[in-house]
Image (cartoon, rainbow, N blue to C red; front, side, top):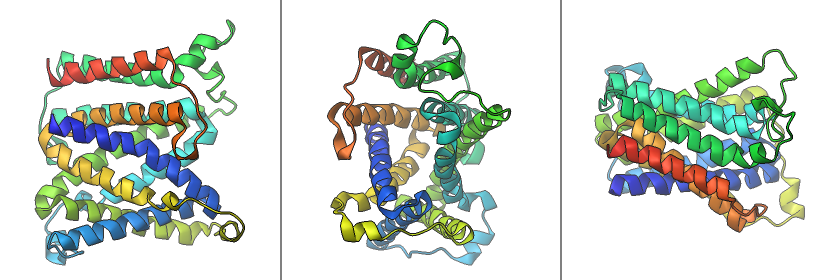
Length: 319
């Protein structure tokens, strides 16, 4: 139960981090600068936590040389997932930008568990686990898109024609969907890789720190290549809440929570529990307008979708 509670809590924190980083992006004028600042703050937070844990904020080159190369790529996978969401939103719209990566996360989680990839605990893919995963995916779809589907006009029959989903104006729309699925699969892979990194290092905190450090270094390279404008004039003319700087801390706790979860429940279930928490957090933000977000009361169909997700987790975990 403790593992489930931790998964739900870090999942709830994820949409809060997204809301906070969106405010930071508006203040800095660039999503890449916002991501870099967020990752940088999270890295510093985890570096301090690592030293409090009596660990050094680096690893020996001998250890790096004797471990598989993918063990150090968790942070890179996380940046690809984060950047993928930024790129996908104008291409696919809000609904598919959520659903496609979720599909990838669930698929990759089940595959990693079934084959024990990345030294993750093995959980064979049974009919019940597959059914539970489908219920979770269905719950996500209903929660995110249910209201739009109920209110659409009779002639809006296809998935792409929903009012909140981008219409297929480009011939390569399917490519963007596949990229969304791939980004989600990399997110689940990051969870599995970081889980094993925690076992190798003997410290979950240090593993989360290394992952965030790699992500920060990756974003530094991206910023140096793209050279997005850094906007500071808003800080002179506008007041910004103090909490726009804590998104990285929430992200750090999210990665740390996943490092803790994977050895206990496996990658697939860890991903799915966090997804339920993410949906709960998103609905809470909408319902109460937290963190400066526009208030949107939660609907009955969204509650139904959330209950379907919980039923899916129950099927996977209990039955």
